[in-house]
Amino acid sequence: MDIIEKLLDVPNIEIESIELTEENDVTITVRSTIDGTRCRKCGRKINKLHGHDEAIMLRHLPILGRKTYIRIYPARYRCIHCEGKPTTTQKLHWYKERSSCTIAYDEHILLQLVNSTVSDVSIKEDIGYETVVGAIRRHISDVVNWDEIERLNVIGLDEIALKKGHKDFVVIVTACDCGNITILAVLNDRKKSTVKAFLSSIPKRLKKTVTTVCSDMYDGYINAAKEVFGDDVVIVIDRFHVAKLYGGGLDNLRKKEIARLKKELAEEEHKNLKGVMWPLRKNARDLVDGELEVLGRLFKYSPMLEIAYKLRNDLTDIFNSDISRSEAQVKIDDWIDKVIKSELTCFNNFLSTLDTRMSEIVNYFINRQTSGFVEGLNNKIKVTKRRCYGILNTKHLFQRIHLDLNGYSLFT
Image 1 (spheres, rainbow, N blue to C red):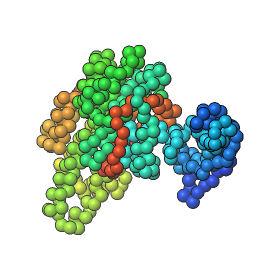
Image 2 (image 1 turned 90 degrees about the vertical axis):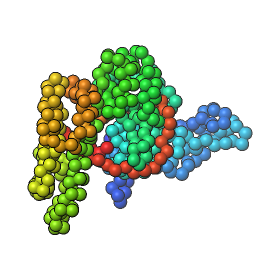
Image 3 (image 1 turned 180 degrees about the vertical axis):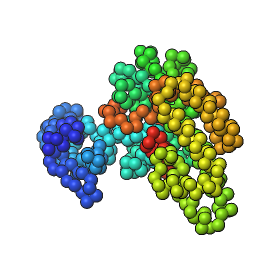
Image 4 (image 1 turned 45 degrees about the horizontal axis):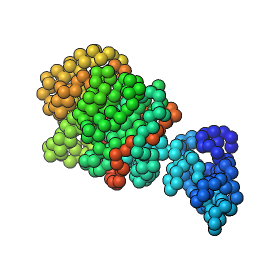
């Protein structure tokens, strides 16, 4: 039991029992080790036990990869000082009233929202959409307690789409210093003025500790950061958003070519091209035999797709390379020349972005930083009180786009 209590990392509790459900989830029944509470009317400390409320089940951080729930029967105490001798239920600091999750799990949810959508987190964590929204609501306050923060170092700006079609956004502002992740704020829109107001609210002593701001390609974020921090801070366009843009160019060409081939090929021939989307989104080195065969058939009918596929992979290889900023600039310029000579138009949107944001894109190669620095980290998460200019209140599912980066799959 002592080992499980340490794994739970929940204060002031004692484990009474542990169960494994039919779904192989872990349910841990605990009791509070704190004696008494404060009367909800007079505020005095009371310790005359009156009984226990009905059990509440709280989702907690997984143990050994299994979904974990904590069950507790909150103690109720009677006040002998107040008229009518009212009772008060004991409140513990590791969960919030009317919450279905522990605070630790809420913080985990907030962290998972970086570089992801509310629906994605709902799917990955196997929890309801409203549970994710509830975690955001519970952990948002009107101000940031900057006194709790010693350094910021890298600030990340990443948006979450709230409505189908990506027409409504909130912005999650994070900070990373020596592996310690802090979720600073959730802003209810991505207007430059909103982002700038928040960045401007950072105290002077902490502004001096900011070295990098990682963002997507949205001008409002980049310009807000530049106006607040000037030339003292490096602005980096997030690598994952860069990959999404040029990968989207290949994806758009695939859709057009598949539509063309459906008209031109016999039904049996066209059936042989079924399932080309996922292999086409992978790098060649990650393909298995069956996927190689599918792509081979596809490229026989569409040489343009083969050229675009190789160009996509060439650019990904550049971003995977351990090279300097100046070397990256030269290699990307060479890549641009190849695209132009190929006469492909599927990368035109990305080429336009390179024309305007090359500096911020190649800044990635200075320290290889992204706003997705939380991915894969197992460090203790610190979530402070934070500023919010609105609350999430919509309920939609989003299409998930698969990108293959650095040998793993990213869904955004």
